[in-house]
Length: 457
Image (cartoon, rainbow, N blue to C red):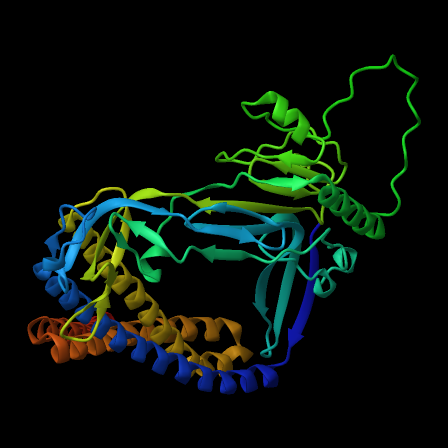
């Protein structure tokens, strides 16, 4: 059920807040301008670096043998990335021979959502109505429910346990006869769920602690009545898990461990424990994985396994290092699978272009919002008559948007003149045309309308 709060802000407070908003608007305007300038320089330098790198890049056809003639050259090569390093997660005492080991966690929590509507009143007051709604969701960290606005949902959250995210990478990863550096190793993304085994004593301790946490929040669990006696049957294994190929060894191991096989999605099977469930690559803290309760926690373990990759980097003895362009920018990359140099550089240029436009829009948005913050006081002062203020506010927002876009184009153009003159001059011409259309054509249109009105009078 939704919960609403209504607050009223006086006219004087609104004017005071608008005055404070001028300072915020100036900061946003300056930040947007700086971002636009920096982004254009970044885009040009990155494009120049990629062009230089692509021209310098040569193929390394056989990375399975060190080629001293390629030392210092930017090379493109494909090979299997493998390792003999053993990595471990000390908290859970599990591990594997892997390129990387990652632990992620999510919590089932109440989450607060809010929606605000404002209404201007005659005399300048503002009535703000905020509606709060609550949903149960899986989130990456516990949610503090004590600060929820609806008292009915305050302190409704708890967690059965807390587990930190964890990541560890192998130090020695082979690439044919070469070794990958740390930067390239961190780019490998061949993840699979980790196969692991937990001793029974560990599982029992986890069960005990989880049950205690559950009962502290939900209260003691009522024990069901004892069922009628049944004929003796063969005891079930200590855990429910997929048996290995050697069924005899697996049966013996069942007395002391819970074995988990790697797969793509955790699938929880029947568990001998009430609060601990182990799946393929995951541990679930809670009573029923398929029907979560607030406080349930799921921990997932992934390993980065050997895979074929393609790298672009500078050969340096038996390893690699980043390429350093004339403009001091550095570059190295790793892609999954076999790729050509042309494919990689095309993708890098597309990514550079995408980020350039994203940051341009962010910069323009900051500039426009900054101008609205600076001149928003005009609308606020007129809020004593909401109808008039709305008309003026619409006009102020329109003017701020036009000026913000024009200003942004000028900044981008000047930056391009600084970095690439031809394109910069073109952008300045476009900005000039916008100013002319807005300032002079708009003025002429107003005169024409005025003359037409006088003629009909």
